[in-house]
Image (cartoon, rainbow, N blue to C red; front, side):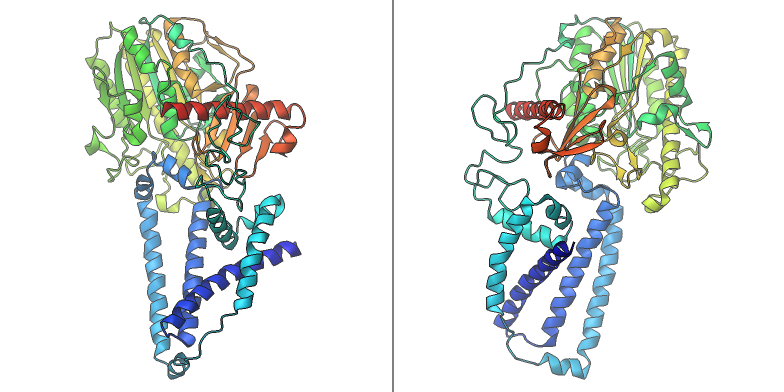
Length: 607
């Protein structure tokens, strides 16, 4: 501990010392001396450090430490601009407080400058000491210390939480990135081929070329092409299909009670008469890839699999899209084919005047549950029900901030305002969230009533699932898309088909075929006990975390930042190297890494 403390102080003093050297060098060149220069430097350093710590604290009070720029962009549909616009309320408040603090600093500075003593010491024209020998020693020692720390897991884990160490190590890493592949020799994991831009941690590993580009398991192996079993089904019409996607739906929704009141009695009834799949998962834990996975049946772009929309159109179904969100968000509508000719399309963008919030930005556009049912009711009265129909319905009730001004209070007397969402109000936040899900259940109930009115209940395949889960400060954090666990990635999956038998884990890429087989009355047994569901945080090409979920929810997780592996069923962490030395760790880790390498290679080829 003493050693850690000494090293920690070293980096603080080193960063401040280097900044001071630059500051006073410039001051000397401008012939600026005296106490005012010292005061200005101190105020600026303290102000910037406090600003950084405040931003970091606020960010980490919602997200865990996996959060990075890629994850923030993911949550905003791939756009940093959208992320900033979505958080505009919090940013405006933060800028306001920052402006007040800046004004106070300026006023104090001006007040002090009027004091005669301050004016006297400010006229001191003695040149600043350079401490050249100390500076040279620091410039030599710091890179050596940093390289050593990058090899020591204990020191690295603690020091990476410090602003001074992160700033210095990142700067040194960038300077040592000679081949410009984004990795140097001072961060972890290190670039083991400093002069080869194609070899670095997490690189695309080209299978069969004899080169280990990503640094894992040697050269990648050519994987067998996965058979597209849906393409083997002859397209034909069957039962009507209603596919309902619930925003931010937690897996326990079906059985959840709030103050002894059932949150989702309608969905619970559907599950009891049909089936609730207990091990169903989102692949990425956020909206855009989840919806694309459901419709495109793949985790990579431009895949060769037949998509849900392609199959339904070739089978003669009439398609209707009814969404409470803006489906252009993250390119969903374009990439899934929702806007193709002949498809009835309605979303929050087409009904922009009915939005529940004032913002017109894609990430904020949202329609009420009542408006979604109204549109469904209108559409079902328009279509020819002698022709097989497909309805995709997206219900946004569970979206942050889990309420809007006119949302009905079905389970609570007061909804939490957005400004009050914090860990200290966890219970209030949770109650508001479950009230939102009760509104989603109400919508499902109204859709069910409409199906009964049209005497379709026995001729419809009804599928209800979440796009991802949602953390409500259960683990100290809020939201989704920044961790791989059951809270953020396990989802409800309900189908009104009691003949369906599922014992294997189901990912969202499986839902389309599951739905089609049910609607056509085909084989409904999903019993592959070796099946796994792939998950990631970040992106396929630049993941922070990857995981596979096997039967009964056993998860193998790999953290690229630390090269540590977690086995959820064993509640055990192991280093990458140690995990490869014994069974069953070796087999599970190898399967996971190989699955990711294959996806990364497929994604690379699709561009």
